[in-house]
Image (cartoon, rainbow, N blue to C red; front, side, top):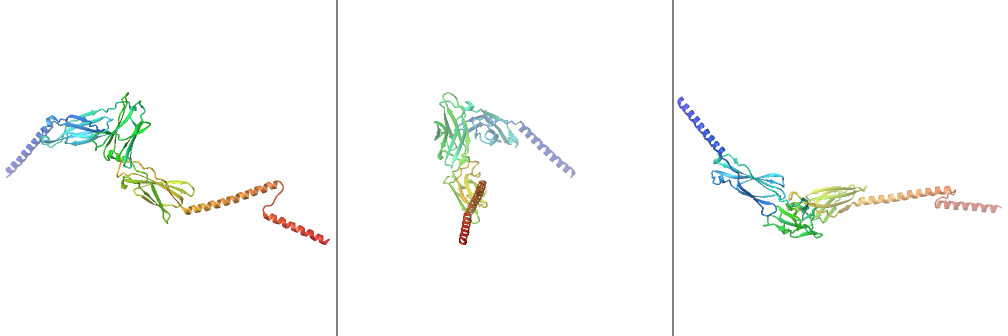
Length: 409
């Protein structure tokens, strides 16, 4: 019995040793297996003003490999975000957006995993490709002050300023592209100022939201090479709604105001707008007070008129962050005002009383000055009809006394 146990134990030990030797040999084999990077890397420009087509081929020593799966680790420097973007794919091509005014940097490696590597991940060294930007022409010849506004989601205007170095007989040209277009096209309608192109107007048919809207502005001159400018937009982030036309004010018996407004007819959904309400309050002291509130509703309530003679309101709107990452405020609506009639009556009475008191004070002051002036001349003339009545009474008394004396004589 003891001998049988010893034999069984030695058998298990021998099996474990054989398994370790097998794993070790496989490990040595996988470590000796080398993975080459992809070959024939290339970057093509299809003329879409930003997107580039990156392509490569599998390493020559791995083309007939069947025991392992092969993928590719692609990295490209995203100049819009100033960081490397990492992509892993089984394809031998990839399409990415680049800023063509900056250096294009791409690097790729091969990833291998499977029976040929004993289940471990093997990665080849990087193969890298760098394309310099085509920044021909002086820096000052690049277009300045470029900006776009997408008005009411109906049309878009992009404008620019003339550069500091403005050669004679030069002309601006704008080209654009988005994913619904096969090739880039020129501006459908230029905006002119003093005979020079200073902008482009895009109709609704030529626009596409939630995709890269690529723009290139260059200039042609017969004497000098000028620098091109590239821009990439998401046009839903440049919307400017129309101004609100009507603002209604309604006062409740508890002296609170309700502000409501109506939207103009436009293509922007109501749930995609937020509103800013500005209140201007004129108190009894005459000092104006400004308050601003942002709301998602089309009404604002519980605004008290206490202590205010007059309140005025105006409203503007912009795209909410649920529907876009940015946008412009619309123009302000016209002021709409509400007056507190009770406060106006009190103020009116106070003004009238103040005028009467002021007139009485001025009259008394003038009378005092007049009496002082007459006193200096030695003649003080009493004031008013009462004095005349007293003088008349004295005259009657003197005449009556004179008549009595004549009768006694």
